[in-house]
Image (tube, rainbow over the protein chains, first blue to last red):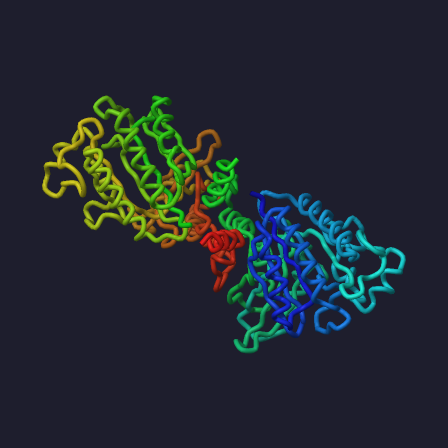
Length: 304
Length: 304
């Protein structure tokens, strides 16, 4: 069975009953498995993580839009996090037995139905967008809900699906497909914030580093150390181990050592298998050699 | 759902129809999933790999004994591999959601039923054996089928279950529980066999190396290189990465580099996650952070 992950971000993080109602609507969809959800009150935003096949996830996202559109009104919404939709952004992520192309097709199909059924304008992003100026979420969302009507009237900003003006209470949504995002931090054996900042600048894309790394240096005040805090946005093309080794090497230039690293939240098994393959110089290793993967393959074979 | 692996070795590797009949008997047991099987004609032996929960695997092993006892007669058996039973050895291996103690209990329960139902003497081995002289398979099997009647009459060699004399055609069987065995080879950038042999001697238990490593040096004639060929018998206590790094260091002493390494056959995901954790200096990583593990946990939770 193919596994796709879907991580809708909704613009409600304060009214627990509203969030519970929306999560409950998702939970009732057969085949869509809720893995996690968390709310941030200062952001006034919640992140829902679910997984399933294409049909189940499309149904779950539609149920989510229905519940969110009925209970969230952006005209009364405040919060620290930028947003332009009641359902702000919906990424589909290929995990196993499914290609990026499958997720792009699912994103477009879901976007079209959302626009038709709820009258909400939808922008495609990342891999689902074929417009290079509209791949990046930040670019699409710039101006936020408050600036949306003006932006949509501008040349080049008609949505991919739906009306050319914002939904009165739900704004517009961004739906797309991307690789799994890995939240990865490396702690340094020093309290010198400038060292963490210099290393972050050395490894991140925006200042000349790796193509799929976002990074910043932060202080962990309670421990008296600093951290290079990163998002890895494509572990196949910029592998975790390569980033770790680069940070370690950069740290050495400052006479600093790596204390430890940490993965925050979920990570696909393939990303860790990649690390093991590199660390062991494994040649010709196939994912079907992982016992659990073989078991799952056997399951599928037998149920056919 | 707990996952146990079971890898019966049977003393037939030449008559394909007999092997197919025995494998077919296993395949018909609900819940026991056949992952692999392979026959070796010169060894005259076949290895069957299956997985499932305790009840399914017990039923599958009983079906295997019934089919094998009816078709294999050790009085007419020749082959290079040492053996003392038609079903020679049956290890149960904990993979996920199950402890070694569970596998020991399953081994004892299965051994008792095999002895009662088929009149075959059964020896417990490895973790299932509480007799330090009867933990090692080679020690139990020494003398083989031909020497079995005499050995069983010797002090200390009464079986754990069943009659104190061999079964006429099926000999005696060895059933137990052990950690997953990982077949792991490291190829060296040299054709000097003595280097591979010295490194093998340095890392294996029998000559002073790691507790859970068996190793030998061999030549890969077709590639003009040599290999350190290993069995890792407990990856939790002697991790793969530690062995790799030790071999690499030893190779350096001989002016040789590691070309690549390879895992032959199946490996539990946890062994590769361990490698990734060490290579990345990951602190506080939990197996439930692996997306696929979380998915499986969610499955189980929902089916309760």
